[in-house]
Structures are given as C-alpha cells and as structure tokens.
Image (cartoon, rainbow, N blue to C red; front, side):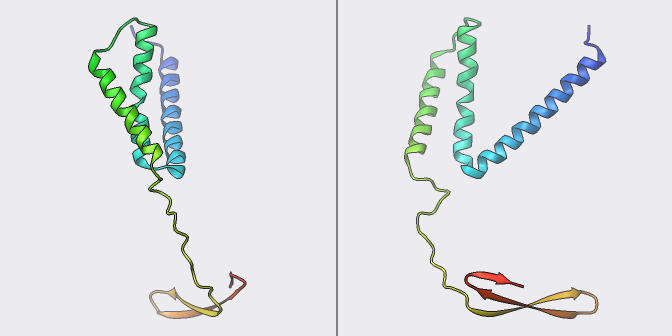
Length: 128
C-alpha cells in the first residue's frame, strides 16, 4: 500500500522546507565560522544517531565507532583551542584618503561616451 496523495505532497513539502532550512543554517554558520569546523561538527552528527540507537533500540555499535568518535571529538577540541584562521589578528593601517577622487565610467559601450563622476572625501566619508 502507498500513502494517500495529500500525505505524499505534505511529506514532499516538509522535506523541501527542511532542506531549505538546512542550507540557510549552513550559510548562516559559514558567516561566523569556517568550513573546516562545519565538517568536524557534521562528523559528530553520527554520535547522536548512535546515542538514539543505544538507548531507544538497544543496538550497540562496534568498538571502532568509539575510536572514530574519540578521534573526531579530539579534532574538534584541537581546532577550537587554536586561533581562528578566518580572522587576521593584525590590524591593517590604511592611509587616510584626502582630497578629490575622479571616477570615469562608461555610459554607453557602443558609442564610448564617458561621463565623469566627481567624489570628495571628508572625514573618512566619500560623497558623490
């Protein structure tokens, strides 16, 4: 037997929304951290599945799983104790831009007519 069509459509919709939320969550995570930590965190996801199988289903994994779990958690701990590779601790000093900046942009690529845009910088702000 198969499920009714409305149940199938509801499950498809729930799967689509779940996938969208997954990708939105990953992109939000990658804004504050980096891909290496995301991969290490995803590897620990198997631990939750095994935890469920042990307590709810009384199915125990082989000993090699625990070895792999210890290696993964150790990798996460080592990664978290090191300085972040995403941020640079050096503050880059930029010289102040003073005076007037002239920008030239193409208005029409076919006729090569150019228009000058004049901008001025005052107190670190650019005015067009």
